[in-house]
Image 1 (tube, rainbow, N blue to C red):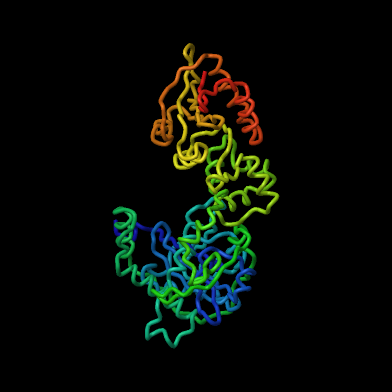
Image 2: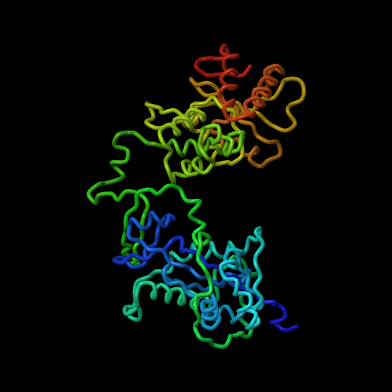
Length: 460
């Protein structure tokens, strides 16, 4: 069996989209954006969108890209023939060209045109993962194509130079052998692919545009948060220009000193992120209860976009986030029922609740009778504050890491069966909906007010 048969049929992914991370600017040339920006917002900075065209070998990290201004699109047929003639790593035309349904609908004649040269066009199923992954990888890598202009590129315009760099990148990776790939098996498949004979199509006359643009080109915009302040920054190392997110700091400000000058730190988003990760209810339910969308919650906790004043107060109230004057930052006040799911989130949520580990957390088990077969219960006995409870699933790795994650972990404490049953039922009620969490725990605390000993809360 020859190598061609082993890797047959040959398959390429073909994708077209508005470039997500690079734009054209009349003064700065090609500009990379730190965070994606909507096209209308980019126009306020004098940025014009570019179309990215890419071809990837299915299942391998071999890719070729080119770009055009959005108002000067190229025919799909011409782009593909260009790729198959000039991108050595593609090994010419494939047997199968896989595209998404939007591209297929935009170019009804593509199937017939490709069939004339022996290429079968297949439309990817909506659940197909590999084709969208090829596009995402191309989008991400495009921002790193820029480098200092050398003598050969000085006569080219910025977009032509970008296309030249994309070709250089493809050629370099093929000659370099794709060193540093994820596994030896992938490296071997790359080498077998590169030994295939090239199926280079015959040159043809450049034709008219064979497709229609549409909203599908910039579908990635729908997931972007509201725009934030941005500023241009010249990278002195490689000569490229970036549009960075944030406010440009005056050069005479020493940020490290001034950051803590007033002792205030708005860490509410960080506290909310950790609490949401440990909350018994899904983030979508938390967002709905707080009167915001899931996307708004995700944008806020990832610091991509702020919440308006009313929405933020609602979320802080739901999650029990309060500003601590003595610490100069926000803390999780509780009391809570939390679920151990993500180690780092649990560790940081605990340190916020306990103000840096000022607590004596312990697992409670009944003195008599059987314990809950599904969950273990840890009381966070803070000093001077009401306790919280962490539910940990039995048999999970995170449960075995509790002594490491919860500072000053005190091991197991035996309690009365009645108290244990109250803990279990309190947690069950607290998990019903996001708003019941703190309410049920506060009722639990009120039932055991006499358990305060020297400012520390002790289980029965």
